[in-house]
Length: 357
Image (cartoon, rainbow, N blue to C red):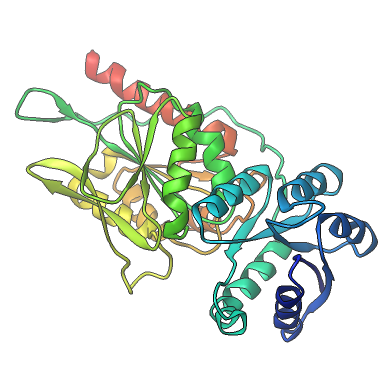
């Protein structure tokens, strides 16, 4: 039986969320009206999962989350509005240790809750088994980097960069806030990120990351030429693909494909990149997340020479996506999140030295 604490200052919302979970097998549910009550019930009820409203009187969700994570860490799912301010607060919560979030329904609550019911139940079940505040894994010395291939020569005599592709889902925002700020502004290859996230969040998330990083971070909404020293975040509720426009590698935001279950799709991004860039000039990184999005595509490219990293279990909130890549024998290395940026930089430095010699 999974114990769940529902925290919301709205009596109607508390009742609806509690009933929604109680209708499912395997949940024992209690409720709290604000952060202060929630902290008392965290001690008395000891829930495995807390769903936490952001805006509450007496003690808001962020303050409550901070105290939970310091005093008695456990899986927390934020219940957030879809406004820009709500997105900013939710991203702050994810940075503080929340596992995931669901968007608070608007309009007629009883009708809107039907739309998020399956999502909420799935996320609560996932959170019950998630790793909270995963400790850093043991970082083994990496093997020698594979010999870099010859760079593609452009018409103007310059060389075209390869691509670094990061696929990530549940637990991703905090992991990306570990990896991307550690990348140097001089990184010679562009970095493309497919993070499963709604469109109301990805623009805010890109701006948040840009403020934290030496490397420039932007959301892709229109066709965007790919340049080294830049990170490109896929727009939520859509897919990002790599194409050539006028002979230039370009990131494009396209409607979400019905053939793929998760969006932005990691699989679609990797497959499109492989159509335009040799596999041995691609680096793929499979990060924390539920499911297997991107695993098969990266494993296929790995067999053709793509260098790949899977985040390790100890530093993953949910060891689904990385595990699927490892299971397919598609990972060169399995690393803790805080070792990934350094490995990317090492591989690209070896490319640069080889091209200079």
